[in-house]
Length: 95
Image (tube, rainbow, N blue to C red; front, side):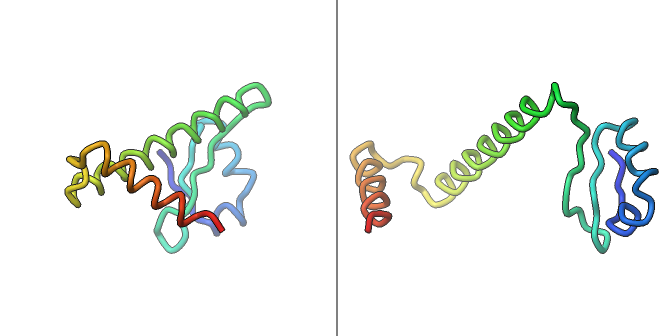
């Protein structure tokens, strides 16, 4: 995957678009650190790409929650304790 700085994107946009057509994905960096992913799409592929990105984000969030749960010893809670945690969280959101 190719990396492109914010400065290069700003100063040489036409070149970056050509590279994007070739590579399909570019990592945008600021001060040498990745800050964004630029990916090519077409009208036909836009909705599918957005849906895939959302699914990937959701899967990553679930994995992070599961890892935290296991690390904190909550992965062995009985169903009644899980239901109580859910009820408490829901009650806290209501106003």
